[in-house]
Length: 417
Picture 1 (cartoon, rainbow, N blue to C red):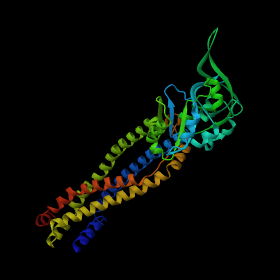
Picture 2 (picture 1 turned 120 degrees about the vertical axis):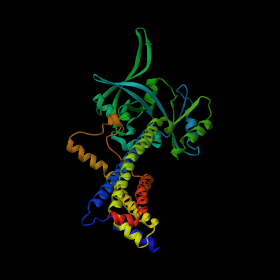
Picture 3 (picture 1 turned 90 degrees about the vertical axis):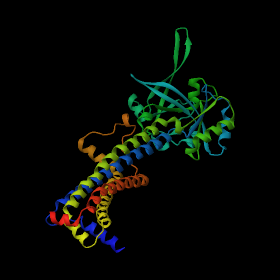
């Protein structure tokens, strides 16, 4: 026990610069700074990837249901008994019918392709509550027969349409006339503007009343499918399949958020692994700088090593002294890196906005990155994994210099000194 604390005390003392040889501690400080910078960068980058994943999931699920049940031909007849049965199915909180079709909106001399979704406002609110995302208007304004539409914010900007304007909706289904096939069209009044915060959705979504959509598409009393809100969204694949089997029908198919947007989350997971590997090389380089630091320390402390050996210190004790010193350098670097990384990650949005105001342009274009902010979510598991990885590398970096110090012969060291 006494030897252990003595070795730790000597290793800690070696971190301090001597009056004549401050260069050793300068090199140690550089190694600490490099390791802390690598750890901080790795924490910030992984936190940003976590933030992207969490925000994408939240925003996607704020517009889409946890799961949907539809048919191969895109029509479900006699859907009311199915909705009533699904609302009492275990694991399902709510069910709502919907009609969905591709179309085109025209306003003046501007036009844009859209995804038209017909909903029943009261039923839809139980599955997906869009009220927090409405910049203007209300879902209750979508009354049947009024022919009103709520547009995504980016779509409204593209069409230069505002609340109260009238836009023309065209759908691919046409009417046969003596002069040819004429697309079905209907004028709709813009009743509200919706902003999810994801450009891909805000650019193409148009929500109308389900009866109005049914009349325009001539679906009668049929619907495209049934949207579900589940108690546990991570059980969506299992619950959706079981619910489809419960209401019967051989041509039913299910879709849930895990496979409908799988490419988003798969790409984030792959990118996160790649970035962790690449940035780990930066941490590894910083950790291996400890090798040069410890070699300099061993060379500087040859006389001290010889004296310790003369007083009875064993090679193992000398080895422990320099392992302790190298480990302390690693711990200081990791601790500083964690502190810096967490502080930067927590305040990242404010830092980015401040930098944007200084340089005069935005770093994140919503049309490219699906969002205009840079979210960051620090996860304890990531911090622990990074710290463990960096500490193991730091400890490994001390082995060669420490072993070299343990092999020094006292007589030779004193003779050369």
